[in-house]
Length: 153
Image (cartoon, rainbow, N blue to C red; front, side, top):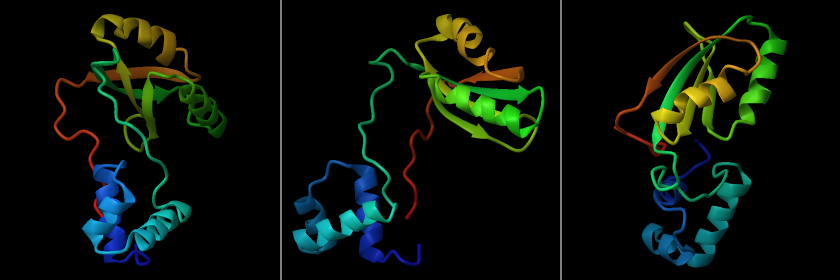
Protein backbone atom coordinates (compact mmCIF):
# COMPACT_ATOMS: atom_id res chain seq x y z
CA UNK A 1 0.00 0.00 0.00
CA UNK A 2 2.98 2.33 0.51
CA UNK A 3 3.38 2.65 -3.26
CA UNK A 4 -0.21 3.91 -3.63
CA UNK A 5 -0.82 7.62 -3.22
CA UNK A 6 -4.11 9.37 -2.51
CA UNK A 7 -5.09 9.52 -6.19
CA UNK A 8 -4.32 5.84 -6.77
CA UNK A 9 -6.52 4.98 -3.79
CA UNK A 10 -9.33 7.17 -5.13
CA UNK A 11 -9.09 5.47 -8.52
CA UNK A 12 -9.26 2.03 -6.90
CA UNK A 13 -12.34 3.04 -4.88
CA UNK A 14 -14.08 4.54 -7.90
CA UNK A 15 -13.34 1.53 -10.11
CA UNK A 16 -14.53 -0.90 -7.43
CA UNK A 17 -17.82 0.98 -7.28
CA UNK A 18 -18.21 0.97 -11.06
CA UNK A 19 -15.65 -0.65 -13.33
CA UNK A 20 -17.27 0.90 -16.40
CA UNK A 21 -16.37 4.47 -15.51
CA UNK A 22 -14.74 6.27 -18.41
CA UNK A 23 -11.28 7.74 -18.20
CA UNK A 24 -12.84 11.18 -18.60
CA UNK A 25 -15.18 10.59 -15.64
CA UNK A 26 -12.33 9.24 -13.50
CA UNK A 27 -10.09 12.17 -14.46
CA UNK A 28 -12.76 14.67 -13.40
CA UNK A 29 -13.29 12.95 -10.07
CA UNK A 30 -9.58 12.71 -9.14
CA UNK A 31 -8.47 16.04 -10.62
CA UNK A 32 -6.04 14.78 -13.24
CA UNK A 33 -5.88 14.97 -17.01
CA UNK A 34 -7.42 12.06 -18.93
CA UNK A 35 -3.93 11.04 -20.11
CA UNK A 36 -2.50 11.05 -16.59
CA UNK A 37 -5.52 9.14 -15.31
CA UNK A 38 -5.25 6.57 -18.10
CA UNK A 39 -1.56 6.04 -17.34
CA UNK A 40 -2.30 5.51 -13.65
CA UNK A 41 -5.10 3.02 -14.33
CA UNK A 42 -2.84 1.09 -16.74
CA UNK A 43 -0.13 1.00 -14.03
CA UNK A 44 -2.65 -0.25 -11.45
CA UNK A 45 -3.50 -3.12 -13.83
CA UNK A 46 0.14 -3.79 -14.75
CA UNK A 47 1.24 -3.85 -11.09
CA UNK A 48 -1.57 -6.24 -10.16
CA UNK A 49 -3.63 -3.92 -7.94
CA UNK A 50 -6.53 -4.42 -10.35
CA UNK A 51 -6.79 -8.02 -11.46
CA UNK A 52 -9.87 -7.86 -13.67
CA UNK A 53 -13.15 -6.18 -14.51
CA UNK A 54 -16.43 -8.03 -14.80
CA UNK A 55 -20.18 -7.67 -14.76
CA UNK A 56 -22.04 -8.53 -11.56
CA UNK A 57 -25.09 -10.61 -12.44
CA UNK A 58 -28.39 -10.89 -10.58
CA UNK A 59 -28.38 -14.52 -9.32
CA UNK A 60 -32.19 -14.70 -9.28
CA UNK A 61 -32.49 -13.74 -12.93
CA UNK A 62 -30.05 -16.42 -14.07
CA UNK A 63 -31.54 -19.24 -12.02
CA UNK A 64 -29.00 -19.24 -9.18
CA UNK A 65 -31.05 -17.60 -6.44
CA UNK A 66 -29.98 -19.78 -3.51
CA UNK A 67 -26.64 -19.25 -1.81
CA UNK A 68 -25.20 -22.09 0.28
CA UNK A 69 -22.09 -22.40 2.39
CA UNK A 70 -20.76 -25.90 2.92
CA UNK A 71 -18.21 -26.91 5.52
CA UNK A 72 -16.18 -29.83 4.20
CA UNK A 73 -14.08 -32.13 6.35
CA UNK A 74 -11.69 -34.43 4.52
CA UNK A 75 -10.83 -37.97 5.57
CA UNK A 76 -7.10 -37.18 5.58
CA UNK A 77 -5.05 -34.02 5.95
CA UNK A 78 -2.32 -34.90 3.49
CA UNK A 79 -1.00 -32.70 0.68
CA UNK A 80 -2.06 -35.10 -2.08
CA UNK A 81 -5.65 -35.18 -0.71
CA UNK A 82 -5.76 -31.37 -0.53
CA UNK A 83 -4.43 -31.13 -4.10
CA UNK A 84 -6.97 -33.61 -5.49
CA UNK A 85 -9.82 -31.85 -3.69
CA UNK A 86 -8.74 -28.39 -4.90
CA UNK A 87 -8.45 -29.52 -8.53
CA UNK A 88 -11.84 -31.21 -8.46
CA UNK A 89 -13.73 -28.37 -6.75
CA UNK A 90 -12.29 -25.85 -9.22
CA UNK A 91 -14.18 -27.67 -12.01
CA UNK A 92 -17.63 -27.33 -10.37
CA UNK A 93 -19.46 -24.39 -12.02
CA UNK A 94 -21.88 -23.99 -9.09
CA UNK A 95 -18.97 -23.31 -6.73
CA UNK A 96 -18.22 -19.59 -6.51
CA UNK A 97 -15.48 -19.76 -3.92
CA UNK A 98 -13.64 -22.42 -1.95
CA UNK A 99 -11.35 -21.60 0.95
CA UNK A 100 -9.00 -23.85 2.90
CA UNK A 101 -9.56 -22.88 6.53
CA UNK A 102 -8.16 -23.53 9.97
CA UNK A 103 -10.61 -24.84 12.54
CA UNK A 104 -13.10 -27.64 12.88
CA UNK A 105 -13.22 -28.43 9.15
CA UNK A 106 -10.89 -28.18 6.14
CA UNK A 107 -12.72 -26.19 3.45
CA UNK A 108 -15.52 -23.66 3.24
CA UNK A 109 -17.34 -23.84 -0.08
CA UNK A 110 -19.61 -21.05 -1.32
CA UNK A 111 -22.01 -22.12 -4.07
CA UNK A 112 -25.07 -20.83 -5.91
CA UNK A 113 -27.86 -23.15 -6.94
CA UNK A 114 -31.35 -22.64 -8.33
CA UNK A 115 -33.20 -23.40 -5.10
CA UNK A 116 -33.32 -25.91 -2.27
CA UNK A 117 -35.26 -28.38 -4.40
CA UNK A 118 -32.04 -29.02 -6.38
CA UNK A 119 -29.72 -28.95 -3.38
CA UNK A 120 -29.76 -32.70 -2.71
CA UNK A 121 -28.82 -33.37 -6.34
CA UNK A 122 -26.02 -30.77 -6.13
CA UNK A 123 -24.71 -32.35 -2.93
CA UNK A 124 -24.76 -35.89 -4.40
CA UNK A 125 -23.47 -34.91 -7.83
CA UNK A 126 -20.86 -32.28 -6.95
CA UNK A 127 -19.81 -32.12 -3.31
CA UNK A 128 -19.88 -35.67 -1.96
CA UNK A 129 -17.92 -37.19 -4.90
CA UNK A 130 -15.07 -34.70 -4.40
CA UNK A 131 -11.85 -36.52 -3.45
CA UNK A 132 -11.47 -37.23 0.26
CA UNK A 133 -14.79 -35.81 1.50
CA UNK A 134 -15.67 -37.38 4.84
CA UNK A 135 -18.30 -35.02 6.24
CA UNK A 136 -20.22 -31.88 5.26
CA UNK A 137 -22.39 -29.31 7.01
CA UNK A 138 -24.48 -26.92 4.95
CA UNK A 139 -25.81 -23.46 5.73
CA UNK A 140 -28.31 -21.73 3.45
CA UNK A 141 -28.31 -17.96 3.25
CA UNK A 142 -31.73 -16.43 3.89
CA UNK A 143 -30.64 -12.85 3.28
CA UNK A 144 -27.69 -10.82 2.08
CA UNK A 145 -26.47 -8.47 4.79
CA UNK A 146 -23.28 -7.29 3.08
CA UNK A 147 -22.76 -9.03 -0.25
CA UNK A 148 -19.75 -8.33 -2.45
CA UNK A 149 -18.23 -5.71 -0.17
CA UNK A 150 -15.69 -3.33 -1.62
CA UNK A 151 -12.14 -3.60 -0.30
CA UNK A 152 -11.10 -0.62 1.83
CA UNK A 153 -8.27 1.33 0.19
